[in-house]
Length: 445
Image 1 (cartoon, rainbow, N blue to C red):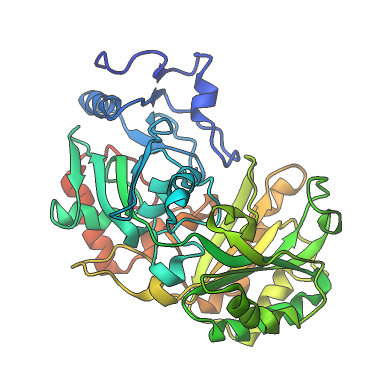
Image 2: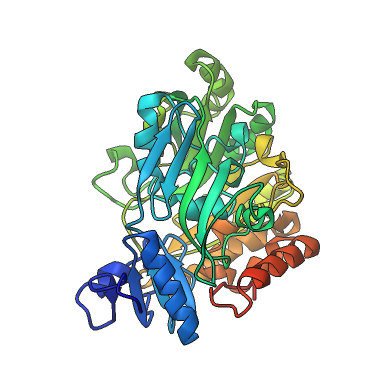
């Protein structure tokens, strides 16, 4: 190892800083790599990759640990979480983002310029991993996937070379990284487009759980009326008795309607009126908001926890599919699930960029289906079966999945998310840049 990677950037399991350096957001697994390189600069990444290549060691990469699907045993883990710089160019409407930065940093840097990124439902997620896996969020129906926003990637490939790739420089490598998710190198910097968005009309409406059949069936018909500037999802939530929640939601079973609209509040209220009329809400939190408050729409958890999740994309959502979801996770069902969710896709997500190949999976899907259960005793033993039951209930409509929603349940399914031609292309480019398979991937090699 060269002198650019030194303690405390170089950590072994016996070191005091090791546990904090490998700590993931999803704590179901405990990472146990042989060695951690806590990169402070792109030079540290280059040195680590060259050393691993010379030693014949496999390499894994982690920024935030939101999608940990193995314990990383036997690998050299390159942690990029400290590569978190963000530079915004308000004239070009772009942001140059370090490989370990989170969306909250990009949002904070963009907001003073009246700009916003196509980020996910939680600003705690890492930018690079989100974009490399496609990336879907409240602005995606209006502007496309996170991968569609990428203008340039700086990546250290398996030969230890740091490359700037874009649509004209090594375009195949650039294209596979915009959606192909993993196995191509270590991202040290990524440049993304920003959009002139400073506010929106959005938030969540919590309906009582017993009204969830009416809410889900109404939602299924209502979303067909929405313009691309609007997006929505609906989730069956079994909330904990958490005192930080509003009293009506503590320990409650609710149907949570999520809504985001880029037009005026008056237009948004008119669009939302049919859903507000379905049932008396427990809480209605939809209103005009600055984009910087976008986390309030989904209100995703902010603290690490052990979970088991499963997911799929759906080709369509007929009434019988809603009934099947309700039978698996609706009122009266004894289940450890925290969430069973449907998200609307379509709009700009379905519009392919002007590239020879497109690595984004699930563009033509109509919906995503997602289920999550905690891995705390005593329900940990039944959590995998509970999440699988939700996906199996809608199996006739399942047409694939999204890389960023592949949790522990994915097993070796990641490669099945692309058609045979696209997968062959991804594999060919991966083998061109990493012929020895240094960068570990799950279900792709």
